[in-house]
Amino acid sequence: MTDHTSPLEQMTRRGDTVLWNDSADPRELAQSIAWGAVGATCNPVIAVQCIKNDLPRWTARMGEIAAEKPTATESEIGWQVVEEISLEAAQQLAPIFPEHNGRNGRLSMQTDPRLARSPKALADQAEYFASLAPNIIVKIPATATGVEAIEDAVARGVNINVTVSFSVPQALAAAEAIERGMDQRAAAGYDISQMGHVVTIMVGRLDDWLKDLAARGQVENDVVLEEGDLEWAGIAAFKRAYGIFQERGYRSRLLSAAFRNTAQWSEFVGGDVVISPPFAWQEKIQATGIEPVDRMQIPVDPAIIDRLERAFPDFRRAYEPDGMTTAEFDTFGATRKTLRQFLAADEELDQIVRDVLIPAP
Image 1: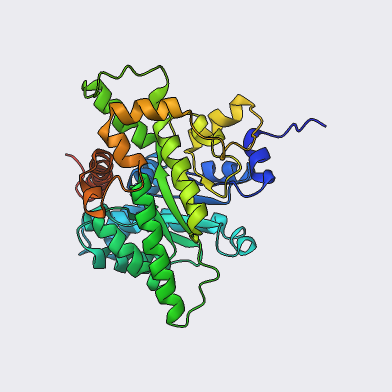
Image 2 (image 1 turned 120 degrees about the horizontal axis):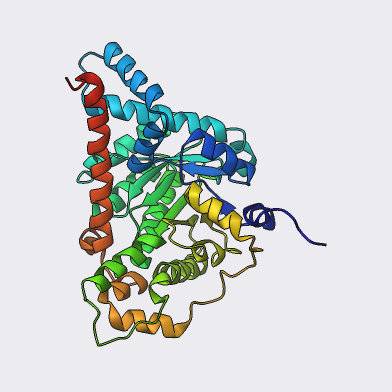
């Protein structure tokens, strides 16, 4: 019998592979939930876009907060709005949350990238965000400082979504930090049965970084890349990390984010993972009409991996489990590029608040 439901609805009905919406916009989230989504996310870039999508409402709210808190800084006003956007999305997901024993029904809030140098500040903010609603999961970056903060926050009872993560070594280090934090919390006598951590690999951003290197002519060993090779780097890293997660029995799931092609969905169907496309990519996936089939266990063509490893030392760093030490995460090109984008979004949020507080003459 032919299944006439959409690709995403078919996937979410198949089993362990679940859909989260990479947006906290209420209209997009409502449609994504209708397609089977059981989670969502917010970060500085997403928050700024949500504000722009409903600018009259949120600038009016900024004015109200400024009147309520006359000594609040631009950043404090802006981040209160981010909290309110996040909590509205968390409320949309609240009916789903009790059904999933902590694994789904969650809204991801991201720690302020300006705190990235302090593990204590990151863990403190993560603990505060987690206190705002039962179904909040908090994003902390997979940097050297972030890995330290992840362990601390998990030990305090915070559910973590690891972010700014592009590689197998980052995913493994973050998963190990989560395991240590879980063990500490259990040893302190707390129930950890409903903690639901995820470790993101921003698959498209690894592809982007290698494309940047190729555009600069930084391809080594005279490798001739074939068309499409650079669309497979993130998929290859994700699949390798998944195999290791399964072997080691980590209590966190991988999450695929930063989509650049529909294969970054279809190649992961069948895994016990979270697929988190931006809403526009969900629409593209739906438009394909492709029937999802289990492909997680099908390896990426070894010839593609060989070409990428010979062409780019940074692919070897991202793909090999020991390709980077924790101390080297911060210098990885994709890490620097992404942190700068998140910081730029913080600055843009400040500017929006500034225009409310001090309108242009």
